[in-house]
Length: 256
Image (cartoon, rainbow, N blue to C red; front, side, top):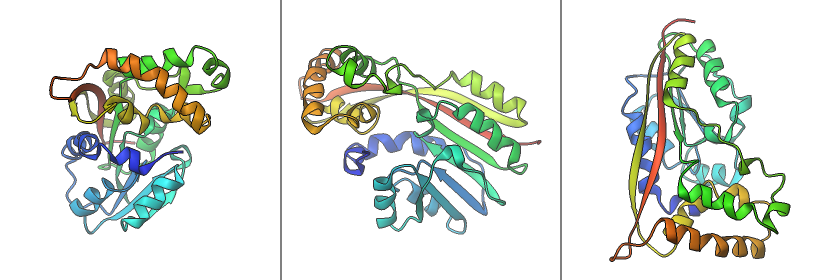
């Protein structure tokens, strides 16, 4: 179960790559903009403010996230990006920290590029932190009993769908796009107790906890905390520095 409140705890930090991605889209007056994986809608509002005359289509797979987005006035709908197809007139396809959950997302990007009109934009940001200590710690705990048994069918234990920027550039160039692709590691200055645990609870830890009971989740986190404390020691002032790598792709369709 995705929690909008947990996700929004670090809203300012999570919003930085959104703004960096949005700044690279050189589209003045799109007719239609799609926000795929809109989450709680607070960042979709930035798309609406930038392009007030556009129809902004927002979808997310989580009903809880969609409900929060709709409470903000965003016309969000529950939907799976794997089944999504650009409607006629779509000029911008935007996805922030969502497609990493879809193993076949590279194929989706290519498919969208082949059906969008020339001049349309695809802008995607994917967390690339699979090998970070925070994420490897989660998998280390999951390898031991009782978690290895309780989580044996969890596909996130061994999957890493995010590819190097150059691979996305290659695929989308071959699909008829002009492409920028790069990566950035943000150094987030987090505050509060168990800050890294709270961060990953709004993202990569969530699929592990989703199949556990509340009591089991608490026990899992209790085993995880010492590993996170070792990897990310608190600073003298109580803050925690948390590096987070992200992959960016901005593509403009030039030829189908």
